[in-house]
Length: 270
Image (cartoon, rainbow, N blue to C red; front, side):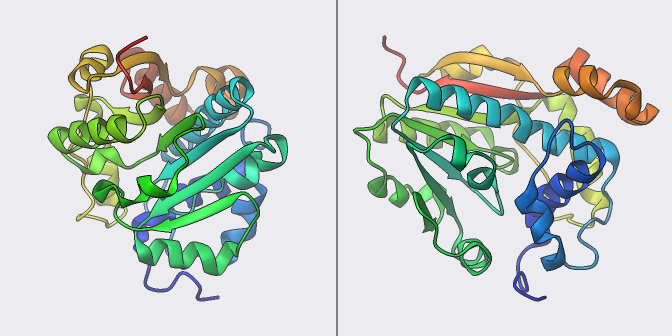
């Protein structure tokens, strides 16, 4: 199958992880749609991956899914917007349980083209081609409804000043919205960039890291609603089912807060 021909290899890393963990640890995370997409992957898509890198990627989705569900429970009619969506399958994981949610995915035109070929047109889902940093996508979102913006595995590839400017622009477009995104500590960037080089994606190094979530939220003129580490549930649920290196790496990430998920209220008022 060649439906992903011409797509950047970095697009496949999260999908490879969701497939691997759905097979190895379905009691923790299971993504049926990701498994269905496995035949579309290039032969070397899993190059450089490890159990830990797969767990780190999937833990993002595990936690963000819970946060999306909680937001939708408080706001049954709402918009959930995935920015830099890639081959995200959140719609497939949650749509049936959240009938009042309108789903949006924004990414570069070639990525949206790949999504449309594979997923087709689905109810309550809108795909938007374009550069998320150019902000044209905001005109397609109904700001009268509660809005949750999800930015997963994206900000790390940009510099802090670009990320802050983007968040401020989102605050202007959706002053009552909330945003969820993942971040790596500055120390954690060292390991992450080492892993990226192993995958052969030397042009996809990461630059943005956060050491103090509250101070970063203040820089953006926002309020920090929640800071989460990645692995508490995974360590409790999987324990010794994980290999030793993975367990040590996850416990180190927890202790040193190497990887985080931030939940911001974009307005600093109220």
